Image 1 (spheres, rainbow, N blue to C red):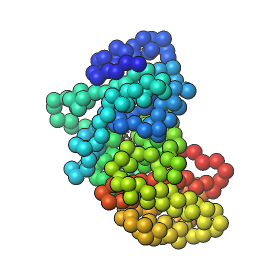
Image 2: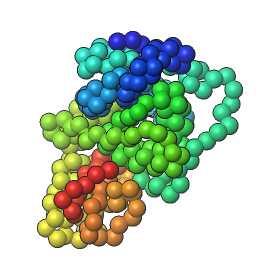
Image 3: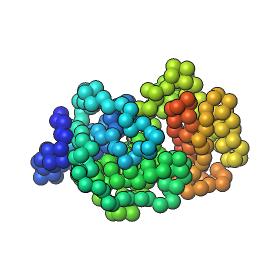
Length: 285
Ligand code: PAF
């Protein structure tokens, strides 16, 4: 496995793969890897000849009061984990490699589906994601790119701009990896106190109860309120509890496949989770 820190180094490493028409699979990350990320790499390994993982904490997707400076940077540990799951190349550029010395004048803004859910609280966040993912796609030029369904809105936004801009990349959504108690794995779980870590799985439990109540005919509005109340009773500060269609259009009732979304804070840690509830027998983002 190679680690490249420059765009030129990466291009050189990938040139023979391109010449021999090998398929390139790409997993963009911000590092501090957990099983959720490693599952993305495993999926890429199954499908592609060459697997590239980027590790880059992208400054432009963090708001002024967010955790860019304190975001965990654990390259040595990440490299070991990636070697174990068969990654071929790690691309770990510096901020200067990615954004250069000059001000960036181009933005990529995906309308409508970035206006609510996490987009309403994290202004500019999805523009920052869209810009960095587009840059990484242009640098790596993968055939397939793998993203976790934990960041469901991010996955939908990426699918949207890839389709809108005719990018020749297949976007693969990979199911959420969970701890044994159901908590969705996230690098930010490491911020939770021991007590909050015990409480955090209530999010997934309340989503599962909601899904089962919906299937038994409960009203969507009642179910959303029930999740909110349960989280508040357990000490969460709820940011939103919402239901959307698979491509994030608003829904009034459970008469189609939907996704239930939660964002809530425990202390200072903001957790997000979601659950797909299918009305029909197959559901696919
Ligand atoms: O999901 C993440 O880790 C980041 O948002 C991504 C896609 C790597 C872009 O910085």
